[in-house]
Image (tube, rainbow, N blue to C red):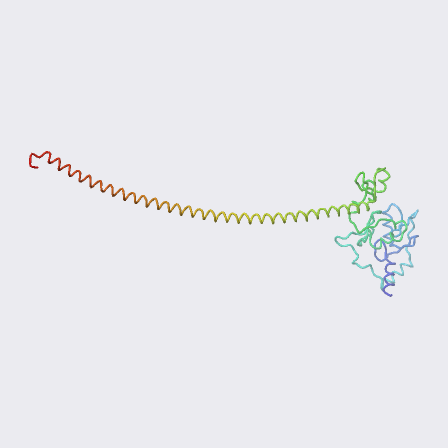
Length: 300
């Protein structure tokens, strides 16, 4: 309980502009407290005088006087238990900063598309408490809020014009899109999301079918390649065997021709040898007869 009471005390004595312990506290007509310097700078930079916390507007700028009683209480508490908000809530690299913090900025917990601005937990409270802000559209912290605003009117894009296929603000609805077919942007987003889901399902199904066909085609190609390799091997074996047969037949035929040639040659040589002998014998007898014919010896 003591810790809970202490936390409430710290929150009550924290300036919602700088998010630090109140310094020279001032109280404005709506009852909220701020640092004198913070509120002065805030109003100097604003076109209207309103409470930074609850957004209540003041017709005339209230005179700011230090709340001495509150200042005394804060000084006493500073000496005891009051401390600044925990440092872990400060915005770090990559975080969206609160647009309303001055000095060191706290991390934004929500962005408002209606304002448009980003808020830390403390500066966001008026959106939950004030009737005028309760209907604002809050989203997760977004550093690109300007991209979600109408370029013409600087209002949040809340409507989708199907006729012009564009996102528009509420002012655009009544100024330039009369009789156009329009829906809430959120509904159109959900519809597009559904269509995208259907398209993704179709693509996924198409991918699965094509992957299956590709797998079957590869399997058929592998089977065909194996068949071709097998046929080539069989043909190679057949032609190799045929070549062996041809070579063997060629060898045998060559041997047969050579043997026949040899026999014929031997036969021819025998005939030639016999003829030569006969020629020699005939020549011898011719010579003898020639000699007898020329002899004068009548006895021979």
